[in-house]
Length: 320
Image (cartoon, rainbow, N blue to C red; front, side, top):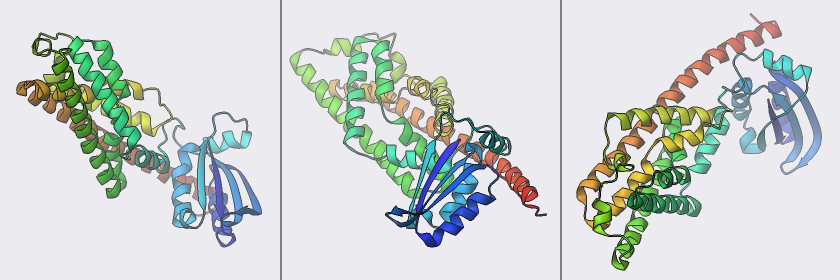
C-alpha cells in the first residue's frame, strides 16, 4: 500500500480528485480545502494499492501536478483496512513485485549524482580493495564490494533506456567514468607512496594470490555472474524486496578490479592492468545489459496487468 499526499492549486483539485475517484485500487480519499499554503490551494490524501499506482501516477503527472504543486509518495508498512484489502484484491499482481516507475526513476537520479559522498565512497572502497589484493584477503575484497556505490549508476543506465530519460543516461555514464578514474588515480598515488615507504613491494604485488587472482583473470563466468547479479540487483531495486541488493554488490568485482588497475599502474604490471580493466568492463557491461533486459521484461509484464486493471475499471464504471 502507498500513501499519496498531493498539494495543488484549487483549479487542479477537481481533476486530481476525479483521477483518484475513478481508480478502484484507491481505498481512501480525503480532501482538505484551502489547507495548502505553498502552493496556495488544497491538500489531497489518498491510499492506493502499490501494484496499481503507476496508472494513477501517470494520470496525475499528465494533469501537471508536479509542475503546479507537490506529489509525495510514501510506503505504508502496516495498515489495517477492509477497503484497503479490497483495493489490493482489485489490483492484479503482487504488491511486492510491483514496479513504481516514478520512485525507481527518482532514486536513479538521486544515487547517480556525482558528488563528494559518491567519490569518497568510491575512493575508500578502491583503497580497501588494493589493500585486500596485497594481503590476498577475500574478507577485505567483500568489504570493498559492499562499500562501493557504483551499482545504482550502472542500473540507472538500463532505467534511462527503458524510461527514455537520456539526461539520466548521461548523468550515470559521467558518474561511472569520473568516479572510477578518480578512485583509480587516488589509489595509484597511495600505492606509489606505500612503495616509496617500503610498505608494499613488487614481490608482494607479483606473488601468487590464490584468493584474489580472479580479479585480473576474466572469463566466461565473470560475464555470467555479472548478468545474474545485475538482474537480481535491478529486481531488488524495483520491487519491495531490498534485501537481495547486498548480494548483488558482493557478486561482482568492479571495485576490486579498479583497485588492481591502480596497483598495476603503480608497480608497472601492465598485464594485470589489462586483465583488471577487462574484468571491470565485462562486469559493467554484463550488469547494465542484464538490468536493461530485466526492466524491459518487467515493463512488459506490468503493461499486461495495466490492461487487466483498465478492463476491471471499465466494468466497475459500467463502460463497455
